[in-house]
Length: 255
Image 1 (cartoon, rainbow, N blue to C red):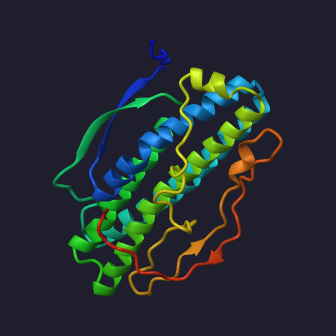
Image 2 (cartoon, rainbow, N blue to C red):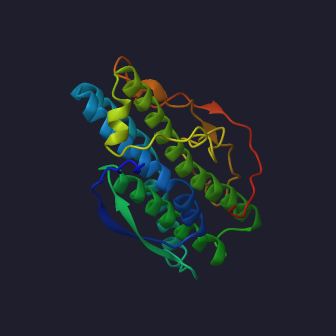
Image 3 (spheres, rainbow, N blue to C red):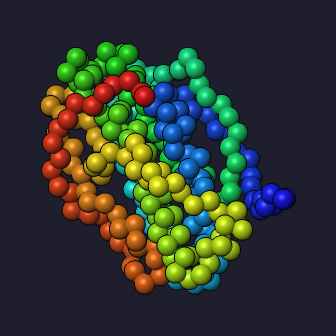
């Protein structure tokens, strides 16, 4: 019996360089699954053939990535200024960078990769604060919490994208298009893909305090509605009202 022929999926190659342990960890743990999820969303929305639904799906993905990317860019600029004001360099070097080529099969793959490089840049500029002794011991402790939260936020964005893919598969199933999506090379997420490594809360705005103030508790917004990708639902792209989250001690080393 012949094995079923696999669909030939088109892709572009893109080289990525990630220097920090945090960005490398996030890349290794979630990127391949996020990429499969993004491809499935793209395929399913085109199979359904509803431009309005496809636009909502794209808007959901863009919102998840943009919120995180914009916050990271703001933080990077703030810490670059802090480094400059203290006569320190704007970034550090890392001893074991990851340089690899990845396959880009969806218009959104490159956007998630850009989010990973933003995380990498944020790790670099904040490490200057530690190594150059710009921060004292208490502030260094807050810095470690901040770096961990930033990494988890990127992974949580990936988990939410996988959740959107799950919702897309449900839509395809209801529309009788699930088999067509599979034949087009889309891969349905595993049951635990969207839950693995996703924190219970996601800080909407990750920020370190000024050098003379103690670190505040992080605020966590309610989750995006993953079912918003379905044709009959609306996508909530507005910021959710944050609720206070308890300050917790997170582990420092990458898993």
